[in-house]
Image (cartoon, rainbow, N blue to C red; front, side, top):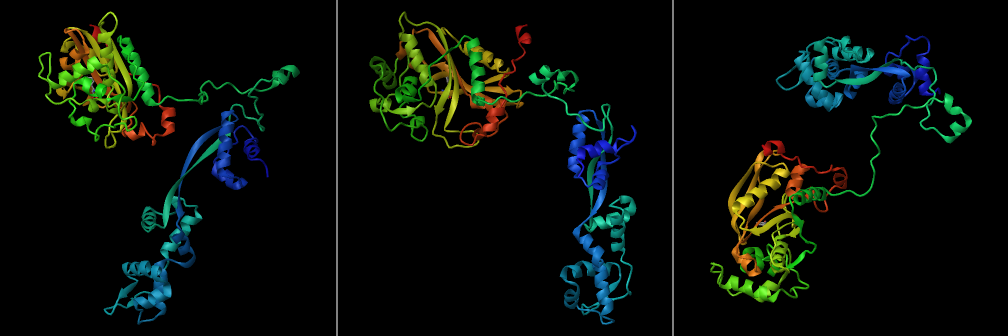
Length: 509
Ligand code: PHE
Protein backbone atom coordinates (compact mmCIF):
# COMPACT_ATOMS: atom_id res chain seq x y z
CA UNK A 1 0.00 0.00 0.00
CA UNK A 2 1.26 3.46 -0.87
CA UNK A 3 2.21 5.45 2.18
CA UNK A 4 -0.51 7.96 3.05
CA UNK A 5 1.83 10.95 2.98
CA UNK A 6 2.92 10.41 -0.60
CA UNK A 7 -0.73 9.64 -1.55
CA UNK A 8 -1.64 13.14 -0.38
CA UNK A 9 1.29 14.86 -2.07
CA UNK A 10 0.81 12.88 -5.28
CA UNK A 11 -2.89 13.77 -5.40
CA UNK A 12 -1.82 17.45 -5.59
CA UNK A 13 0.90 16.90 -8.20
CA UNK A 14 -1.04 17.31 -11.46
CA UNK A 15 -1.14 21.13 -11.47
CA UNK A 16 -0.79 23.94 -8.91
CA UNK A 17 -4.58 24.19 -8.85
CA UNK A 18 -5.19 20.54 -8.11
CA UNK A 19 -6.80 20.03 -4.74
CA UNK A 20 -8.20 17.37 -2.51
CA UNK A 21 -11.69 18.80 -2.06
CA UNK A 22 -12.51 16.72 1.01
CA UNK A 23 -10.20 14.50 3.05
CA UNK A 24 -13.16 12.31 3.95
CA UNK A 25 -13.99 11.34 0.37
CA UNK A 26 -10.27 11.12 -0.37
CA UNK A 27 -9.69 8.70 2.51
CA UNK A 28 -12.60 6.53 1.39
CA UNK A 29 -11.41 6.40 -2.20
CA UNK A 30 -7.81 5.64 -1.20
CA UNK A 31 -8.84 3.18 1.46
CA UNK A 32 -7.03 5.21 4.14
CA UNK A 33 -7.93 5.94 7.71
CA UNK A 34 -9.34 9.49 7.86
CA UNK A 35 -7.61 10.37 11.14
CA UNK A 36 -4.27 9.34 9.69
CA UNK A 37 -4.86 11.49 6.62
CA UNK A 38 -5.83 14.49 8.77
CA UNK A 39 -2.83 14.03 11.07
CA UNK A 40 -0.40 13.86 8.16
CA UNK A 41 -2.05 16.80 6.39
CA UNK A 42 -1.57 18.93 9.49
CA UNK A 43 2.03 17.91 9.74
CA UNK A 44 2.54 18.72 6.06
CA UNK A 45 0.85 22.06 6.64
CA UNK A 46 3.34 22.71 9.44
CA UNK A 47 6.12 22.42 6.86
CA UNK A 48 4.15 24.57 4.37
CA UNK A 49 3.80 21.71 1.86
CA UNK A 50 0.02 22.06 1.90
CA UNK A 51 -2.68 24.47 3.05
CA UNK A 52 -5.78 23.20 4.80
CA UNK A 53 -9.27 24.58 5.06
CA UNK A 54 -11.63 23.12 7.60
CA UNK A 55 -14.89 21.66 6.34
CA UNK A 56 -17.81 20.73 8.45
CA UNK A 57 -20.39 18.45 6.92
CA UNK A 58 -23.72 17.64 8.41
CA UNK A 59 -25.59 14.52 7.44
CA UNK A 60 -28.07 12.04 8.79
CA UNK A 61 -27.32 8.54 9.93
CA UNK A 62 -29.90 5.79 10.27
CA UNK A 63 -30.46 4.09 13.60
CA UNK A 64 -30.38 0.30 13.82
CA UNK A 65 -34.19 0.36 14.03
CA UNK A 66 -34.23 2.29 10.73
CA UNK A 67 -31.91 -0.28 9.12
CA UNK A 68 -34.29 -2.99 10.27
CA UNK A 69 -37.20 -1.10 8.68
CA UNK A 70 -35.28 -0.95 5.41
CA UNK A 71 -35.07 -4.74 5.34
CA UNK A 72 -38.43 -5.75 6.83
CA UNK A 73 -40.72 -2.76 6.39
CA UNK A 74 -42.07 -0.33 8.94
CA UNK A 75 -43.81 -1.59 12.05
CA UNK A 76 -47.19 -0.20 10.92
CA UNK A 77 -46.83 -1.90 7.56
CA UNK A 78 -46.04 -5.22 9.19
CA UNK A 79 -49.06 -4.88 11.46
CA UNK A 80 -51.31 -3.89 8.56
CA UNK A 81 -50.08 -6.84 6.53
CA UNK A 82 -50.89 -9.22 9.37
CA UNK A 83 -54.37 -7.71 9.77
CA UNK A 84 -55.11 -7.81 6.05
CA UNK A 85 -54.06 -11.46 5.97
CA UNK A 86 -56.31 -12.31 8.89
CA UNK A 87 -59.39 -11.30 6.89
CA UNK A 88 -62.51 -9.47 8.05
CA UNK A 89 -62.51 -10.84 11.55
CA UNK A 90 -59.25 -9.09 12.38
CA UNK A 91 -57.02 -10.17 15.23
CA UNK A 92 -57.00 -9.99 18.99
CA UNK A 93 -54.00 -8.19 20.49
CA UNK A 94 -52.41 -11.37 21.81
CA UNK A 95 -52.65 -12.99 18.39
CA UNK A 96 -51.15 -9.98 16.69
CA UNK A 97 -48.29 -9.93 19.19
CA UNK A 98 -47.67 -13.57 18.42
CA UNK A 99 -47.46 -12.96 14.72
CA UNK A 100 -45.41 -9.74 14.50
CA UNK A 101 -43.70 -9.63 17.90
CA UNK A 102 -44.46 -7.53 20.94
CA UNK A 103 -42.38 -4.42 20.13
CA UNK A 104 -43.45 -4.24 16.50
CA UNK A 105 -47.07 -4.69 17.58
CA UNK A 106 -46.88 -1.83 20.07
CA UNK A 107 -45.45 0.75 17.66
CA UNK A 108 -47.17 -0.57 14.54
CA UNK A 109 -50.65 -0.76 16.05
CA UNK A 110 -50.48 2.82 17.30
CA UNK A 111 -49.43 4.10 13.89
CA UNK A 112 -52.04 1.98 12.07
CA UNK A 113 -54.78 3.51 14.19
CA UNK A 114 -53.35 7.00 13.76
CA UNK A 115 -53.13 6.53 9.96
CA UNK A 116 -56.67 5.15 9.99
CA UNK A 117 -55.43 1.93 8.42
CA UNK A 118 -57.13 -0.12 11.10
CA UNK A 119 -59.76 0.26 13.77
CA UNK A 120 -60.39 -1.27 17.13
CA UNK A 121 -63.62 -3.23 17.59
CA UNK A 122 -65.65 -3.10 20.80
CA UNK A 123 -64.29 -6.47 21.84
CA UNK A 124 -60.73 -5.14 21.40
CA UNK A 125 -60.02 -6.92 18.14
CA UNK A 126 -58.10 -5.01 15.48
CA UNK A 127 -59.45 -4.95 11.97
CA UNK A 128 -57.82 -3.57 8.82
CA UNK A 129 -59.88 -0.89 7.04
CA UNK A 130 -57.56 -0.51 4.03
CA UNK A 131 -55.69 -2.92 1.83
CA UNK A 132 -51.90 -2.99 1.57
CA UNK A 133 -50.52 0.57 1.48
CA UNK A 134 -47.31 2.26 0.38
CA UNK A 135 -44.62 1.97 3.12
CA UNK A 136 -43.78 5.67 3.21
CA UNK A 137 -41.48 5.50 6.20
CA UNK A 138 -39.39 2.82 4.59
CA UNK A 139 -39.29 4.76 1.31
CA UNK A 140 -38.12 7.93 3.06
CA UNK A 141 -35.38 6.04 4.90
CA UNK A 142 -34.34 4.46 1.61
CA UNK A 143 -34.03 7.84 -0.08
CA UNK A 144 -31.96 9.23 2.76
CA UNK A 145 -29.64 6.26 2.76
CA UNK A 146 -29.12 6.43 -0.99
CA UNK A 147 -28.09 10.07 -0.72
CA UNK A 148 -25.62 9.26 2.11
CA UNK A 149 -27.73 11.09 4.65
CA UNK A 150 -28.00 14.34 2.69
CA UNK A 151 -30.83 16.39 4.20
CA UNK A 152 -31.79 17.62 0.72
CA UNK A 153 -33.12 14.15 -0.09
CA UNK A 154 -36.26 14.75 1.98
CA UNK A 155 -38.51 17.66 2.88
CA UNK A 156 -38.41 19.14 6.38
CA UNK A 157 -41.65 17.51 7.44
CA UNK A 158 -40.38 14.06 6.54
CA UNK A 159 -37.07 14.67 8.33
CA UNK A 160 -38.91 15.89 11.41
CA UNK A 161 -41.15 12.82 11.43
CA UNK A 162 -38.20 10.44 11.18
CA UNK A 163 -36.30 12.34 13.86
CA UNK A 164 -39.32 12.20 16.16
CA UNK A 165 -39.33 8.43 15.82
CA UNK A 166 -35.58 8.45 16.55
CA UNK A 167 -34.95 6.67 13.28
CA UNK A 168 -32.35 9.19 12.14
CA UNK A 169 -29.93 11.57 13.80
CA UNK A 170 -27.85 14.44 12.54
CA UNK A 171 -24.08 14.17 12.86
CA UNK A 172 -21.36 16.67 12.03
CA UNK A 173 -18.15 15.51 10.46
CA UNK A 174 -15.00 17.60 10.42
CA UNK A 175 -12.74 17.18 7.45
CA UNK A 176 -10.44 19.37 5.36
CA UNK A 177 -9.89 20.47 1.85
CA UNK A 178 -6.25 20.45 0.85
CA UNK A 179 -4.42 22.66 -1.65
CA UNK A 180 -0.72 23.11 -2.29
CA UNK A 181 1.22 25.16 0.22
CA UNK A 182 4.06 27.60 -0.57
CA UNK A 183 6.72 24.88 -0.07
CA UNK A 184 4.83 22.18 -1.97
CA UNK A 185 6.91 19.35 -3.46
CA UNK A 186 5.75 15.86 -4.45
CA UNK A 187 8.04 14.38 -1.81
CA UNK A 188 8.69 15.73 1.67
CA UNK A 189 12.33 16.12 2.60
CA UNK A 190 12.74 15.63 6.31
CA UNK A 191 14.33 18.71 7.76
CA UNK A 192 17.21 18.32 10.15
CA UNK A 193 16.52 19.44 13.69
CA UNK A 194 20.14 19.54 14.80
CA UNK A 195 23.42 20.57 13.31
CA UNK A 196 25.79 17.65 13.89
CA UNK A 197 29.54 17.29 13.89
CA UNK A 198 29.22 14.92 10.91
CA UNK A 199 27.42 17.58 8.84
CA UNK A 200 30.19 20.03 9.60
CA UNK A 201 32.93 17.54 8.82
CA UNK A 202 31.41 16.46 5.50
CA UNK A 203 30.20 19.92 4.49
CA UNK A 204 26.69 18.43 4.18
CA UNK A 205 25.29 21.21 6.35
CA UNK A 206 25.45 23.53 3.31
CA UNK A 207 22.53 21.88 1.51
CA UNK A 208 20.71 20.28 4.41
CA UNK A 209 17.29 21.84 4.98
CA UNK A 210 16.93 22.79 8.66
CA UNK A 211 13.83 23.06 10.75
CA UNK A 212 13.29 26.69 11.73
CA UNK A 213 13.50 27.46 15.42
CA UNK A 214 10.14 27.62 17.13
CA UNK A 215 10.41 30.54 19.49
CA UNK A 216 6.81 30.08 20.57
CA UNK A 217 7.33 26.69 22.13
CA UNK A 218 7.32 26.29 25.88
CA UNK A 219 10.31 24.81 27.60
CA UNK A 220 10.19 21.36 29.12
CA UNK A 221 8.91 21.43 32.66
CA UNK A 222 11.77 20.75 34.97
CA UNK A 223 11.03 17.92 37.36
CA UNK A 224 12.12 17.97 40.95
CA UNK A 225 10.82 19.03 44.30
CA UNK A 226 7.91 21.41 44.60
CA UNK A 227 6.90 23.69 47.40
CA UNK A 228 3.46 23.10 48.82
CA UNK A 229 1.15 26.14 48.46
CA UNK A 230 1.24 26.63 52.23
CA UNK A 231 5.00 26.94 52.06
CA UNK A 232 4.76 29.37 49.15
CA UNK A 233 2.39 31.61 51.08
CA UNK A 234 4.55 31.23 54.18
CA UNK A 235 7.60 32.40 52.25
CA UNK A 236 5.71 35.44 51.01
CA UNK A 237 4.30 36.33 54.44
CA UNK A 238 7.71 35.86 56.02
CA UNK A 239 9.16 38.31 53.51
CA UNK A 240 6.45 40.84 54.28
CA UNK A 241 6.93 40.57 58.04
CA UNK A 242 10.71 40.88 57.72
CA UNK A 243 10.17 44.00 55.58
CA UNK A 244 8.19 45.37 58.53
CA UNK A 245 11.12 44.75 60.86
CA UNK A 246 9.82 41.59 62.50
CA UNK A 247 12.18 38.87 63.66
CA UNK A 248 11.27 35.19 63.42
CA UNK A 249 10.64 33.32 66.67
CA UNK A 250 12.05 29.81 67.11
CA UNK A 251 8.90 27.70 66.90
CA UNK A 252 10.56 24.42 66.01
CA UNK A 253 9.00 22.28 68.73
CA UNK A 254 5.43 21.09 68.86
CA UNK A 255 5.23 19.77 72.39
CA UNK A 256 4.70 22.42 74.99
CA UNK A 257 3.79 22.49 78.65
CA UNK A 258 0.37 23.69 79.74
CA UNK A 259 2.30 26.26 81.71
CA UNK A 260 3.58 28.06 78.62
CA UNK A 261 0.60 27.27 76.41
CA UNK A 262 -2.03 28.42 78.94
CA UNK A 263 -0.91 29.50 82.43
CA UNK A 264 1.66 32.05 81.36
CA UNK A 265 -1.12 33.55 79.22
CA UNK A 266 -3.36 33.99 82.24
CA UNK A 267 -5.72 31.33 80.97
CA UNK A 268 -7.37 29.80 84.08
CA UNK A 269 -6.78 26.10 84.69
CA UNK A 270 -10.51 25.42 84.50
CA UNK A 271 -10.83 27.06 81.08
CA UNK A 272 -12.82 24.81 78.70
CA UNK A 273 -10.09 25.01 76.03
CA UNK A 274 -7.86 23.09 78.45
CA UNK A 275 -10.15 20.10 78.19
CA UNK A 276 -9.03 16.95 76.37
CA UNK A 277 -11.94 17.64 74.00
CA UNK A 278 -10.08 20.64 72.64
CA UNK A 279 -6.44 19.91 73.34
CA UNK A 280 -4.22 16.93 72.59
CA UNK A 281 -2.38 16.04 75.77
CA UNK A 282 0.81 14.01 75.60
CA UNK A 283 0.81 10.61 77.30
CA UNK A 284 4.53 9.96 77.29
CA UNK A 285 6.13 12.00 78.80
CA UNK A 286 2.95 13.38 80.33
CA UNK A 287 4.70 16.02 82.40
CA UNK A 288 7.23 18.68 81.55
CA UNK A 289 10.57 18.59 83.37
CA UNK A 290 10.90 22.15 84.53
CA UNK A 291 9.68 25.71 84.30
CA UNK A 292 11.44 28.84 85.64
CA UNK A 293 10.47 28.48 89.28
CA UNK A 294 10.42 32.13 90.37
CA UNK A 295 8.35 33.05 87.34
CA UNK A 296 6.11 30.04 88.03
CA UNK A 297 5.46 31.41 91.51
CA UNK A 298 4.52 34.84 90.16
CA UNK A 299 2.16 33.29 87.58
CA UNK A 300 0.59 31.13 90.27
CA UNK A 301 0.08 34.18 92.51
CA UNK A 302 -1.46 36.16 89.64
CA UNK A 303 -3.96 33.35 88.97
CA UNK A 304 -4.77 32.84 92.63
CA UNK A 305 -4.91 36.34 94.08
CA UNK A 306 -4.07 38.76 91.28
CA UNK A 307 -1.81 41.82 91.33
CA UNK A 308 -1.18 44.91 89.16
CA UNK A 309 -4.72 46.03 89.93
CA UNK A 310 -6.24 42.61 89.12
CA UNK A 311 -8.00 40.38 91.62
CA UNK A 312 -6.92 37.17 89.83
CA UNK A 313 -9.15 34.17 89.35
CA UNK A 314 -9.26 33.09 93.01
CA UNK A 315 -8.77 29.33 92.71
CA UNK A 316 -6.18 26.80 93.73
CA UNK A 317 -3.46 26.85 91.08
CA UNK A 318 -2.30 23.25 90.51
CA UNK A 319 1.27 22.39 89.66
CA UNK A 320 0.36 19.07 87.97
CA UNK A 321 -2.08 20.92 85.73
CA UNK A 322 0.62 23.44 84.73
CA UNK A 323 3.12 20.66 84.08
CA UNK A 324 0.91 18.67 81.68
CA UNK A 325 2.50 18.27 78.28
CA UNK A 326 0.44 18.96 75.18
CA UNK A 327 0.67 19.66 71.45
CA UNK A 328 0.66 23.43 71.42
CA UNK A 329 -2.77 24.85 70.58
CA UNK A 330 -1.36 28.18 69.42
CA UNK A 331 2.00 29.76 68.71
CA UNK A 332 1.19 32.31 71.41
CA UNK A 333 2.88 29.72 73.68
CA UNK A 334 6.12 30.74 71.98
CA UNK A 335 5.27 34.44 72.14
CA UNK A 336 5.02 34.20 75.91
CA UNK A 337 8.40 32.46 76.14
CA UNK A 338 9.97 35.11 73.94
CA UNK A 339 8.48 37.91 76.03
CA UNK A 340 9.71 36.23 79.22
CA UNK A 341 13.21 36.08 77.70
CA UNK A 342 12.96 39.68 76.55
CA UNK A 343 12.13 40.80 80.07
CA UNK A 344 14.94 38.78 81.61
CA UNK A 345 17.71 39.19 79.07
CA UNK A 346 21.04 40.67 79.97
CA UNK A 347 20.86 44.45 79.88
CA UNK A 348 17.12 44.35 80.45
CA UNK A 349 14.15 44.81 78.20
CA UNK A 350 14.60 46.11 74.66
CA UNK A 351 11.70 46.86 72.29
CA UNK A 352 11.17 44.01 69.83
CA UNK A 353 8.99 42.84 66.95
CA UNK A 354 8.53 39.12 66.60
CA UNK A 355 6.64 36.84 64.24
CA UNK A 356 6.24 33.15 63.57
CA UNK A 357 4.45 30.94 61.06
CA UNK A 358 4.16 27.38 62.25
CA UNK A 359 2.01 24.41 63.08
CA UNK A 360 -0.53 24.19 65.90
CA UNK A 361 -2.90 21.42 66.98
CA UNK A 362 -6.51 21.34 68.12
CA UNK A 363 -8.82 18.45 68.86
CA UNK A 364 -11.41 19.57 66.31
CA UNK A 365 -14.16 17.76 64.48
CA UNK A 366 -12.80 17.85 60.97
CA UNK A 367 -14.84 19.33 58.14
CA UNK A 368 -14.31 21.35 54.98
CA UNK A 369 -12.72 24.22 56.90
CA UNK A 370 -11.26 22.57 60.01
CA UNK A 371 -8.38 20.20 60.53
CA UNK A 372 -6.75 18.97 63.74
CA UNK A 373 -3.51 20.58 62.72
CA UNK A 374 -3.06 23.85 60.94
CA UNK A 375 -0.67 26.77 60.83
CA UNK A 376 -0.74 30.10 62.59
CA UNK A 377 0.78 33.35 61.57
CA UNK A 378 1.50 35.34 64.70
CA UNK A 379 3.01 38.76 65.19
CA UNK A 380 3.75 40.89 68.22
CA UNK A 381 5.33 44.22 69.03
CA UNK A 382 6.66 44.94 72.50
CA UNK A 383 7.51 48.57 73.20
CA UNK A 384 6.95 51.37 75.68
CA UNK A 385 3.53 52.97 75.82
CA UNK A 386 1.98 51.32 72.79
CA UNK A 387 -1.68 52.04 72.28
CA UNK A 388 -4.60 50.37 70.56
CA UNK A 389 -3.89 52.78 67.70
CA UNK A 390 -0.48 51.15 67.26
CA UNK A 391 -2.12 47.74 67.09
CA UNK A 392 -4.65 48.87 64.49
CA UNK A 393 -1.93 50.64 62.49
CA UNK A 394 0.39 47.62 62.50
CA UNK A 395 -2.41 45.29 61.48
CA UNK A 396 -3.47 47.66 58.73
CA UNK A 397 0.06 47.83 57.36
CA UNK A 398 0.39 44.05 57.40
CA UNK A 399 -2.91 43.38 55.66
CA UNK A 400 -2.36 46.13 53.13
CA UNK A 401 0.77 44.28 52.09
CA UNK A 402 -1.28 41.19 51.33
CA UNK A 403 -3.80 43.21 49.38
CA UNK A 404 -6.51 43.76 51.99
CA UNK A 405 -7.14 47.43 52.73
CA UNK A 406 -10.62 47.59 54.18
CA UNK A 407 -10.59 46.37 57.75
CA UNK A 408 -13.14 46.30 60.53
CA UNK A 409 -12.48 45.47 64.15
CA UNK A 410 -14.97 43.76 66.38
CA UNK A 411 -14.61 43.53 70.18
CA UNK A 412 -13.80 39.97 71.20
CA UNK A 413 -12.47 38.02 74.15
CA UNK A 414 -9.17 36.24 74.75
CA UNK A 415 -8.03 35.35 78.28
CA UNK A 416 -4.65 36.98 77.58
CA UNK A 417 -5.62 40.19 75.78
CA UNK A 418 -7.59 43.24 76.75
CA UNK A 419 -8.91 44.80 74.66
CA UNK A 420 -9.29 41.99 72.13
CA UNK A 421 -10.43 42.50 68.59
CA UNK A 422 -11.48 40.15 65.86
CA UNK A 423 -10.25 41.39 62.50
CA UNK A 424 -12.62 41.39 59.54
CA UNK A 425 -11.37 42.21 56.08
CA UNK A 426 -13.19 43.04 52.90
CA UNK A 427 -11.69 40.50 50.60
CA UNK A 428 -11.27 41.89 47.07
CA UNK A 429 -11.07 38.36 45.60
CA UNK A 430 -14.10 37.02 47.43
CA UNK A 431 -15.89 40.39 47.36
CA UNK A 432 -17.16 40.02 50.90
CA UNK A 433 -16.29 40.73 54.52
CA UNK A 434 -14.71 37.76 56.20
CA UNK A 435 -13.03 37.09 59.51
CA UNK A 436 -9.32 37.13 58.91
CA UNK A 437 -7.71 37.19 62.32
CA UNK A 438 -7.70 37.83 66.03
CA UNK A 439 -5.73 40.41 67.96
CA UNK A 440 -5.32 42.31 71.18
CA UNK A 441 -3.05 43.90 73.75
CA UNK A 442 -1.56 41.41 76.17
CA UNK A 443 -2.97 41.83 79.67
CA UNK A 444 -0.91 43.16 82.57
CA UNK A 445 -1.75 39.88 84.37
CA UNK A 446 0.31 38.18 81.67
CA UNK A 447 3.13 40.74 81.34
CA UNK A 448 3.81 41.72 84.96
CA UNK A 449 4.83 38.25 86.24
CA UNK A 450 7.34 38.10 83.36
CA UNK A 451 9.08 41.11 84.82
CA UNK A 452 8.45 43.51 81.93
CA UNK A 453 8.69 47.20 82.89
CA UNK A 454 5.30 48.58 83.83
CA UNK A 455 4.89 50.92 80.86
CA UNK A 456 5.77 48.26 78.29
CA UNK A 457 2.77 47.28 76.21
CA UNK A 458 2.60 44.32 73.88
CA UNK A 459 0.30 44.32 70.87
CA UNK A 460 -0.26 41.04 69.05
CA UNK A 461 -2.32 39.39 66.36
CA UNK A 462 -2.75 36.00 64.84
CA UNK A 463 -4.33 34.39 61.79
CA UNK A 464 -4.30 31.02 60.11
CA UNK A 465 -1.99 30.39 57.19
CA UNK A 466 -4.55 28.12 55.55
CA UNK A 467 -7.17 30.78 55.07
CA UNK A 468 -5.25 33.19 52.84
CA UNK A 469 -3.75 30.18 51.05
CA UNK A 470 -7.17 28.73 50.24
CA UNK A 471 -8.36 32.10 48.99
CA UNK A 472 -5.20 32.67 46.97
CA UNK A 473 -5.25 29.23 45.35
CA UNK A 474 -9.05 28.97 45.14
CA UNK A 475 -9.24 25.81 47.20
CA UNK A 476 -12.61 25.40 48.89
CA UNK A 477 -12.00 22.29 50.96
CA UNK A 478 -9.12 22.34 53.41
CA UNK A 479 -8.65 18.59 52.89
CA UNK A 480 -7.58 19.32 49.34
CA UNK A 481 -4.88 21.59 50.72
CA UNK A 482 -3.42 19.59 53.56
CA UNK A 483 -3.39 15.92 54.47
CA UNK A 484 -3.51 12.56 52.73
CA UNK A 485 -6.10 13.55 50.14
CA UNK A 486 -3.93 16.23 48.58
CA UNK A 487 -3.39 15.82 44.87
CA UNK A 488 0.34 15.88 44.19
CA UNK A 489 -0.33 17.48 40.81
CA UNK A 490 -1.88 20.46 42.59
CA UNK A 491 1.34 20.98 44.54
CA UNK A 492 3.36 20.63 41.36
CA UNK A 493 1.28 23.05 39.33
CA UNK A 494 0.44 25.70 41.94
CA UNK A 495 2.01 28.98 40.84
CA UNK A 496 4.27 31.03 43.09
CA UNK A 497 2.47 33.24 45.57
CA UNK A 498 2.59 37.00 45.14
CA UNK A 499 0.22 39.19 47.02
CA UNK A 500 -1.13 42.11 45.10
CA UNK A 501 0.16 45.03 47.15
CA UNK A 502 -2.50 47.62 47.72
CA UNK A 503 -2.04 50.81 45.75
CA UNK A 504 0.88 52.34 47.64
CA UNK A 505 0.95 55.56 45.66
CA UNK A 506 -2.56 56.43 46.73
CA UNK A 507 -1.54 55.43 50.21
CA UNK A 508 1.43 57.82 50.28
CA UNK A 509 -0.54 60.89 49.25
N1 PHE B 1 -3.70 32.92 70.00
C1 PHE B 1 -4.80 33.43 69.28
C2 PHE B 1 -5.52 32.28 68.55
O1 PHE B 1 -5.09 31.17 68.69
C3 PHE B 1 -4.42 34.46 68.27
C4 PHE B 1 -3.96 35.70 68.97
C5 PHE B 1 -2.64 35.97 69.05
C6 PHE B 1 -4.88 36.56 69.53
C7 PHE B 1 -2.20 37.12 69.68
C8 PHE B 1 -4.48 37.70 70.14
C9 PHE B 1 -3.14 37.98 70.20
O2 PHE B 1 -6.50 32.47 67.87
